[in-house]
Image 1 (cartoon, rainbow, N blue to C red):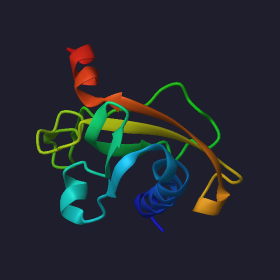
Image 2 (image 1 turned 135 degrees about the horizontal axis):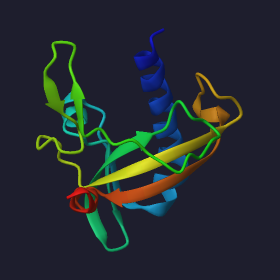
Image 3 (image 1 turned 60 degrees about the horizontal axis):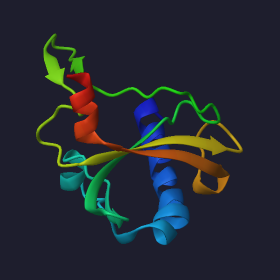
Length: 137
């Protein structure tokens, strides 16, 4: 299994945990986008939370740092393709339709190839995408 496949599997398990333990009780109008088209637009979920109505959120989890709660999070601003071309990263990509990110720091009973049942808690932070961009300017 490649690291990319492993990361994708862990992200799916974290999403299941979020659906059951957070979204089911803390938000309204919840929708999870699982189709490829919406995923490519940076849309993982949409929901209403207090005064935030029907926001579109991209979930970002630190899948390689289980149980560490690092006080940092990497945002993809740009990257270099193997062809040598620079490509705009997901933070500044205008094709992404998300308004927010949920940054997720997982805690679990094991640190590799975890499944939903291994997760003990998630520390999460909801961040406004435009405020990040404004701060960087």
